[in-house]
Image 1 (spheres, rainbow, N blue to C red):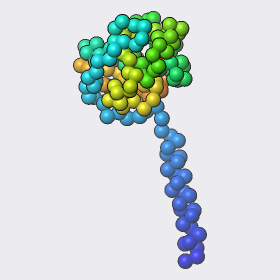
Image 2: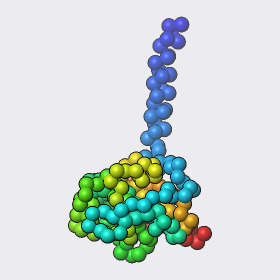
Image 3: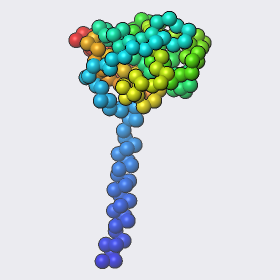
Image 4: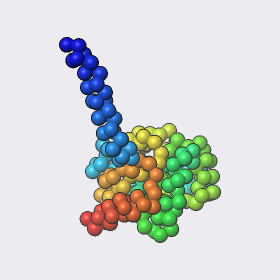
Length: 177
């Protein structure tokens, strides 16, 4: 009985260790979304301060496009921005922006300083559209197909390598279908 009592902590340690080791093998940016293969939620957002035209869900439909959630206060958005600028410069895919929980004027100041890769930008100052999308943090990017369905979600910055290895092939397949 005494031996069994000594094995319980060891067994507990092994179970907890296995659980933690399994967690280390998972990609934290690969977070499931309830929206995959569902229509993009309907929205109609005003323009960010300093721009004239806002963004609605209807603007995105009918084409394969990216919907990128960003903010000037987001450190990872600064990492992602050069990749988005390069995609826009090469006219690879329409990129729509959702400026999330931004102070008035900060988003346009950031874009004026770093460049604007977005076709249109909506101001989601209160975060309502982000909630409908299931956004957990910025940046997040949604791949939208021609029928207006969400096909993929990227939680975290898009890098050149991630674009080349994951998103570009996926987008080519969506364009063919």
